[in-house]
Image (cartoon, rainbow over all chains, first blue to last red; front, side, top):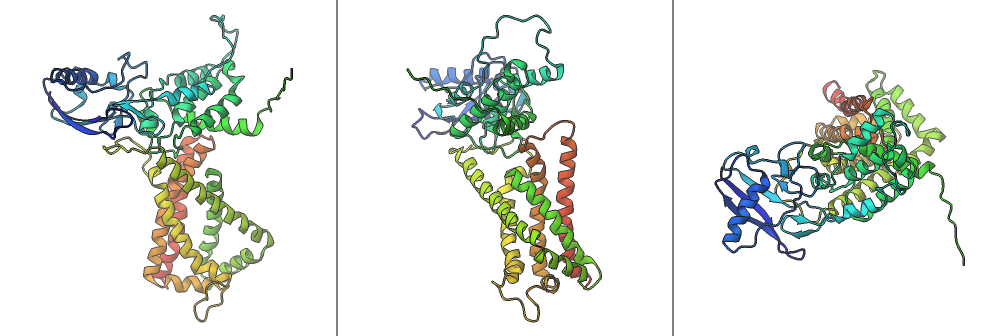
Length: 257
Length: 205
């Protein structure tokens, strides 16, 4: 197969950057999108040109490292998959393919197609965890969890933190990501204990990092490679409202030596 | 924004209910009685302030949120987004601005006349909303402007009602389907209901 690629090239964070056109041929329909880019990069290296930088790691859709905004859609045209699971057979022969980095003020471009997603790490650091060690695997039914809650929690926990929700959102909002993290812990007894503090801290951090707000366009749900549902956003909003209105006030203990 | 919006949603129903009295074939008696009640009842007078507050809050939040949302993506994509979205959700600020322009016009036509800021047309008392409406809608161009305003209000409401429920956390597979249907029906009934009045006066005077 042959393709015309229009790839965003940008030397570093300070560079203005722009689209550069490349032609690739002899691409197998069964090669993945990254294998196609690898092929392009081999050509570029042979010509002494700086190869295209892009993020990738596991190449099996579970790590959340890969990105790429392909023809106006994060992770390309295939639903419920990451870019590494996308194959060239999903494109027409001779098609022009636009490849751009995630666009969000909170995700600055580092080089070419690589963006800095550490904003997500900061949101997780604000509360996306359970503070006590959970120990070894408990015996079944020592902590009862309703099956429906455990299912919903697991569905939310499927979030790999790739940032496709932010990339697709008309407002570059991170609500789907944050709500998935809030939900997966809030639905389980171990996560319930810190739920009120967690949702407030994570939302405050999300807001401070410059992500946009949710206007319920639901592009995030349509593009999420793990098909996380926007019902999680409603759950986060409920948790947030309940925490603001009803959470017990934390006692401030001042220690003087 | 969602809470202020839901408050306005209730207001629109009351306003529509009173306006539909214009259709009663009684020479405007029932409509004028309702207008007089709204203009004199102390509870309603107090709520008018709350209503203005609701409008101002809703608009202020709308503008603020839109600015924040624009700023959050300083470098835009070269390729147009191909993501499936709820179609009207991306144009809320646009439909909102059109409704706002309509609201300004509406204030000049009625509210400012009532409070004496704008002089009423010759021969019509400034509290006589019935004859004021008849005169306005007898102008086809003017009636059309009103109907365009309501059409965009309908677009706005179609997304707004279901989105407001999502924002306040009410999204559950038990009732989200019902909310979506109610949202669409509400938008059609409100926009259609307000539009029926100028159509009636244009066609059967």
